[in-house]
Length: 281
Ligand code: SF4
Figure 1 (cartoon, helix red, strand yellow):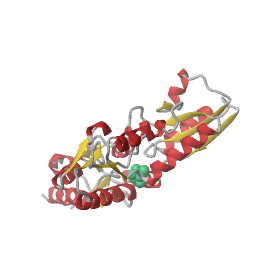
Figure 2 (spheres, rainbow, N blue to C red; figure 1 turned 180 degrees about the vertical axis):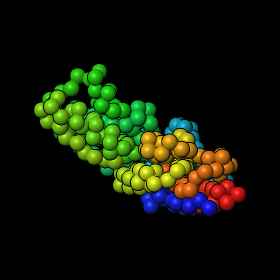
Figure 3 (cartoon, helix red, strand yellow; figure 1 turned 90 degrees about the vertical axis):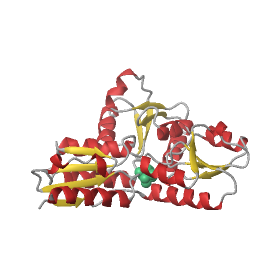
Figure 4 (cartoon, rainbow, N blue to C red; figure 1 turned 45 degrees about the vertical axis):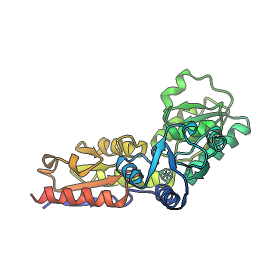
């Protein structure tokens, strides 16, 4: 029978657990309607669970009314967004992950010290938009290749979306070295991201099949799937046990599982149980 192994670091991180606690407590205690600004985390199953508690997502602070409560999600927001919610009469509960807050402060600091600020991240991702909101002159780059179209100044600062890979940061930094007089890098990749990615790569080296669990729209889960696929060609990214296919495991002796930072432990267990059932059958 195949061995099924869960990565040593996988699944819901400190920031997501903290945000879920905050929103559940708020749903219990608030008198008026409770909203999140966008889905609280990129995990459709969790979003459905919150909907059952009466928590609904809005896309813009202008959608919330007087007396309602708006929970800011782990990704964080620009200061202007928080002000708009307060102006609309809402009580704001800030569930921004402290690691994302650290990226906000890093961006403010480097921009304030006069560096040309580069944010290494995905253009348009809510976390990146929030960081840009704290340093509006910043330029977003997805990797070293994007530097081609940028006129670099003498002093350049770099801040990183928390879910980027260390490899992408290293490649950007090595491209910048020698092209600027002064380079200041504040590595704001979060510990959970680095730990998940390292454990994922280690496990992927030792298994025949990797299964990555988490929202298809989750940046950190997608990154795990990319890291695993680069090492183990038989990598599959799923959100639910129903997406698993027994053919994937037909000749596998070792099957690895990892999960994004927005995936609760119960979802990982459900996937593991389903895989064990298929591998037995
Ligand atoms: S992945 Fe990191 S930055 Fe994102 S919520 Fe989790 S702990 Fe915070």
